[in-house]
Structure formats: C-alpha cells, structure tokens
Image (cartoon, rainbow, N blue to C red):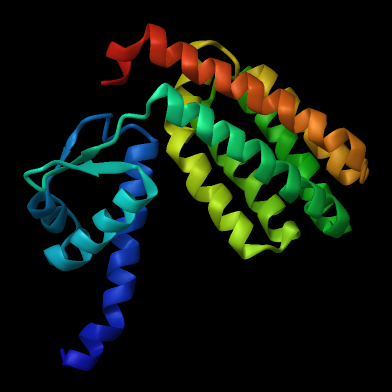
Length: 226
C-alpha cells in the first residue's frame, strides 16, 4: 500500500473508530468509568493505534470520555450540573431546530415523521428499547435534515449524546418510554401542522421530563450506572 493510499484511508479509519466508540458508550457496552485500552481497540478493529487515539481525542473534546493524569482514557460520568447545562442548551437548540423544520418540512418528510412516532409508541408498548432508540434517532435525523443548519445541528448531536445513554437508561428504569413517545407525537403534530406557537412549550415539557428523570437516576441509582 502506498503512503498516498494510507493517507486517503486515515480519515475513514478515524471515523470508523469514532463511530464504534460512540455506539459502545451510548449503548452502555462500555459502561461509565470503564477503562479504554488503545491496544485492545486496535486489535478489535484491526487498525493501528493512531486512528484510535485520534478518535479518543475527539470523544474527549465532546465530553464522552476523560483522560487521567497518567493519560489513560475512561468513559466519562456526567454530573448533575452537566445534566442541567446540557438540558438548558438542548431546550434552546431543539426549539430552534423544530421551528426551522416546521417551516421547511415537505410532505414526504412530514409523513415519515408521523410514521416514526407511531413506531416509537409501538416499541414503547412492547418495551422494545432497541427499536425505540432507533426510531428516536430517525426522528431527530428528519428534524436535522429539514432544519438545514449544519452548525446548530452538530451542536445538538454532541449535546444530546452526552446525556443520551443516561436518558435511555432512566426512561427504561422509570417506565417512561410510553410518555416520551407521546411527547414526540405532540412535537411531530406541531411540526407537521406548522403550529409554531406550540413547539416551544412542547420542547420545554419534554426536556423538563428528561432532565428530572436523569437527575433522579443519577441520585438514586449511581451504583447501577458504574
């Protein structure tokens, strides 16, 4: 393999390592405080340590992992203050994105959004966390695509990712998947109907419930998260 070919593959290898780690962390396959070995990951993914290290540095900047004084990486534990800050920011960002999406949404996207909320409700009824999470991701992807603001959308993704793993766990722990699905249904209807005045209070209610659920689980089930 030529050096030019290696250089062209490097960004892809970093992205592959990054995506693998994000999925492992947000799904709790790598639990909170779990040590992360560059050598082990390199062996698992069949790549060198360089793209692994670059992916870890990116995740550190996004707050999903931390690095100790001895330069060892581990999965980050979120604090109540960080939850408060992330939820405050998400309320602002989501209100903007949902409003922009409502203004730009075409008929096909509107139909997709309604269909996905129905999938979320069905998954919640079946207590199917995995399919619920997939539908939730699809819901927000449609919003991001319709809102058409890469800068704000990128900030939303990074901010939501910081608390996503704790939110999903708390929703299951408190049996809130059903009510959360209904909140998404209310948001979807407001967006599809272009009812801009209904979006902000719906976002505020949803984020408020998310905030309180995560804070409760951090307070009462800290041992469960480690």
